[in-house]
Length: 210
Length: 210
Image (cartoon, rainbow over the protein chains, first blue to last red):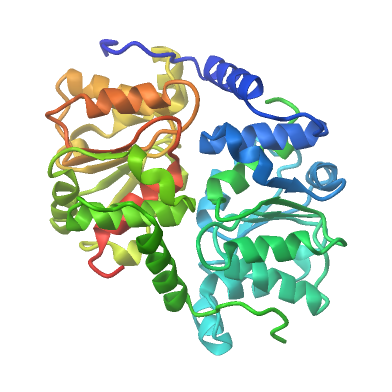
């Protein structure tokens, strides 16, 4: 193959230069070690150094998520995009990555409950919620329904990454999560969010090596 | 399940209200039917109504992509996140969705060529490129390498969706694509981009129904 275009082809060099640019441009002061790692990787995923004012960590949430991953917790995802974005080789304990959205029970559950498939898919998580890292990268209804499950006594996860995106319920669902002071959460407030940001938070917490 | 939170649970109503908000707030004038559909869905995916000035369509590109999908073309993706975000039930001709990133040949190809896995994975697309819709939602190196393959005589796709994201090569690779006037392209210029935007463009072009 003739190299007809001029660009950097070395993946490690690309990461290094990307993270250096982010650290030169973004406002990251006051963040703990793991909070900074999460913020840098979220910026890397969305291309916006000005996302940091929208980012909120509950006290100790990033450390709690890191510890849970090291201890081998499952990672529960609301969407297949999130599940497929997580870099398996970065996971510290071969952690199971679980998405129940395409389970065959989901369509009938959604009809029965009058809720979205994304929301009712969480009913299938069951006991796996206890101590898990949860990544909501798509549906506000999933995040609202997770809070309903926890209201009703579902086992608490170690960390909830709330990055639902969009124009109906996204800002409200993430604010509702952040308002729950008993829950460890990492949130991008407002309309911004998405699976790439949720994946970035997981991939950051998964591995000491950037 | 007790409904303890107040939110809209009807997926169709959520979509409808989301798209109405986007059309009320975003600058969409001057776009053709399919260009507008793509723009609306990209905004929906990223939560930013102000992304439109960064969006560029080569003349006829959206229509060309739509026609190719209807004719049953394959959809070639640079990442698993893109491949898993495409809503199969929206595809007009059960179009094959192909991502070669995890092919077993890719690591050795990457070492041999001194390029990223994301880039060399495209060498495995071969004849499937002809008339395809290509979605690059992650790696600038993949987009640059696609242009190299086309420089070297690879069969031309019907449409290239260039939404590489980030800080090293993203803006440059998308500008290089847009500069190729013989190629049909849809691009988000600058650092912005990502798999969710690339997926949104495909999902928009796939189906008349929003």
